[in-house]
Image (cartoon, rainbow, N blue to C red; front, side):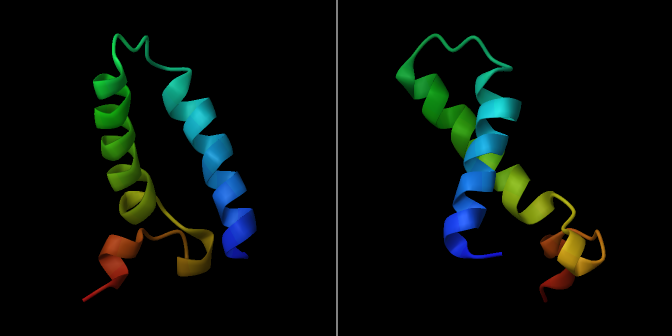
Length: 60
């Protein structure tokens, strides 16, 4: 997947999963939840290219 396409996929995921799930009360809360979400989404979610294993299990 190209970096450009991957960014659009991630953008759709963050909107669908994160932004619609919370009733944010401040910009600081948006930043905090987004940082937490990126930590979980990127290294911890299973990836098809890795045999549906999360990258955190692949990296030394």
